[in-house]
Length: 326
Image 1 (cartoon, helix red, strand yellow):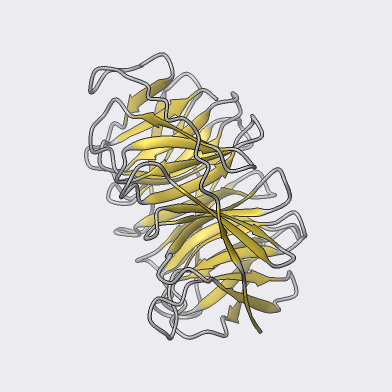
Image 2: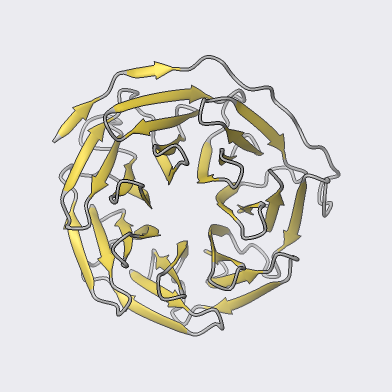
């Protein structure tokens, strides 16, 4: 079932505030950066583990890495070569679970570095986003197979076909309503972007976005009970009310290309501007504040709230992991 939303453009923008610092410096007082040991690692998704540390993927490095709140990084090589890990999530079993896009597997790593890998039944599925569900399982998107997958902590995988062809699903997140929500950045029509919902029983409902070519990439549950997502092509942050209303907020920086988004410990949403080279926050009322990075051309990717009350983010091109204090 497709539902079309009325879109409200919020024109009131927050004051842009910029943190300054020398390029390559370790800290600006607001933002701190830590160099990744492996060169050109292409860090991506991040998640907080049961050990309180931040864990992240290294696509080109073919590793899963852990960084302590003091900035010490430990890297673990994935058993499968050229696995291209993309996203990572904390599981109910105390391990970290991640997607292996090229290896077509779901991986699990314990907090001491032990690996287990599970092959996805559909060949060439290209698993992308992953999140822990309210049912005690992990849920993931299959970007090229056009499916949503579920994997139990014991490794049993079930797949559910997305109704729309060529949905190009990317990220997935657990909503406060007990369902899983995911992005569809394209569809059968020209740039038909959608938000999808899947129940823990596997029933999928899709919602067509009124903004054509929005290309929703990342999605997160907000403290207000709504779903928040980045619109990479339209340079907006969108708020989705599960009852059927969407509100979009333009980002002050042009060609910002927002990517990752997460709920912060301060009651706001925080997101990356991959081309704008900034970390930004948006209140639940839509006021946006931006913070410039010390490293130019960092190529921001994932972002998550850490156990230390800071936001942690990946600098894909800068080859660093950064933090910002709310």
